[in-house]
Length: 405
Image (cartoon, rainbow, N blue to C red; front, side, top):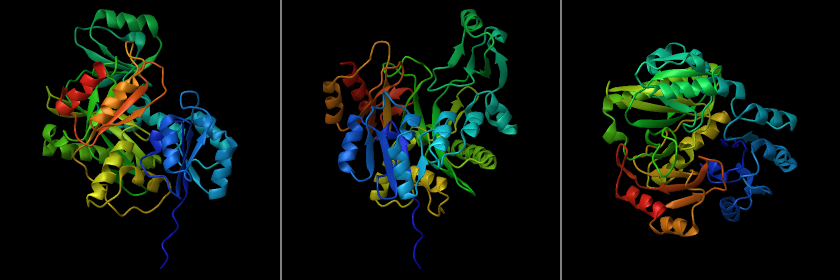
């Protein structure tokens, strides 16, 4: 019996790193903007990586989709298009160019990620898993001498998450966005974690729980900005019962996603409140989470060592193309990455610093970004860099020393 032919996929992205959860090959091609890293990969996979003229700093996904080369390649290969995150402009551009976008609908992603509409979408799961919360307009905030979190409906990497801890913080929001709606939540403290998962037609495939590195200087100026993942800490920071609780949470959120029509990758961010000794759901990423690519690359290495199964990214592509998945997700227990973002004091990283990081064994990816808190450097290690919550181990301290020297 002949095996069914793999469905062809073209991943279109201005940032090729987002597409590198799988090796480019005949049924998985990448169209991307021209950057130094993309040129390296084009040299390695010339038949399967297509470079377009603009750099990732001057283009976006809809601009790439408008290129006739993308439509011609999709028609020639009878391929579906995958993007990092769908939105209304991307969706409209794909429709206009008559190319088949495989990602879930933009309106569904918006409903799930929006901090306000997410509460209604979650239904009873909101009360079960979210910290105590309410929906408020900016002008309705008050200060009762107890810190709390206020998040605008849309946010990215913690930039629009506010810790309200004084009358002044309340006054600032009253003055700037009095009519804007957000979600007010109880302030909790403790380690945060993230887990990627894939929704198929009949089940949820859970990836590996990673400790989430958040708000550490000099990597970012924002105290709630996610700057990295460490897969080596999970079992030392979380008990067996907490791991089972997170698995149940992923399963229930996954079922809600499937019932809404979601397919492919999503991610959830979790925090353990050390005061209550309780796990809370903090955020749902209705898209391919940024950490899924490196998780998959670590899984590829574990597979080379003899562990069978699929990477989380492979499962994502299979789910989007409705291919049957019979293998488990590859478990990993080590590896980390940390991101240097643009800060008020740090706009660029010197070639000498990059060479020094590579010399001690790290993989380093550079970005041509200038906006505050955007990525300029991604540092990846096959070993963990955290000793425990908020504390770097020797490997992490070495990275820090190189960056600030």
